Image 1 (spheres, rainbow, N blue to C red):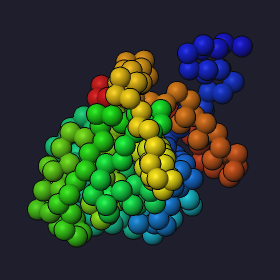
Image 2 (cartoon, rainbow, N blue to C red):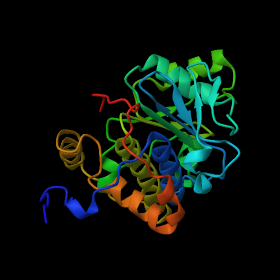
Image 3 (cartoon, one colour):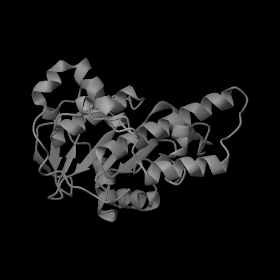
Length: 265
């Protein structure tokens, strides 16, 4: 059996080809299990080769999204395909994509522990290995003044987020970006992990933060060897979702001809 000694990948664990809509639905379901579970209030975008975007049906909870629920919109948020609801707040994502043309995925939600730190206006310290993977990518957007369902506000927020890839939105939630589904999933998981571990450590009265040289060593491995993707994490999540809901298998189709690639890390 072919085996990769670095990542642990085995041929019998390889995923079937996933269409873009399947990836969107599976990402929503997998993130719901990882704490991105504030009902249907979050949103995400997946940029396609023709600069259209796949988005979630905002009328459906993340844990019940199906590929058939996913909606296609253009760069201005106009519906192209699909009958689901499209939240007006999707324009924050679209504005971010306009400023970062090589960004492929964006995710916004209100995971419990990250939202606590966002409300406190603090970036949590690093107490775990997974949390160290965000050493240079984590940020705090402090200028949140309410909804971003108007273009000027969305543009201002997207510009303020800047180049960070895992951002706490003050009194709101999180915004995470990535170049592919495995990378954005890894960042989302790492962000909530960092926030959860730090909250629990501080609830105990404090702890010993990971020394900076160790943080930078872990960051180098995550960046240089794995491209900011936790090895096997996305594949594990997909297998779990397919086991939990076998009816999804019928909607898993061929390769994604319209899914773009990006060199962004």
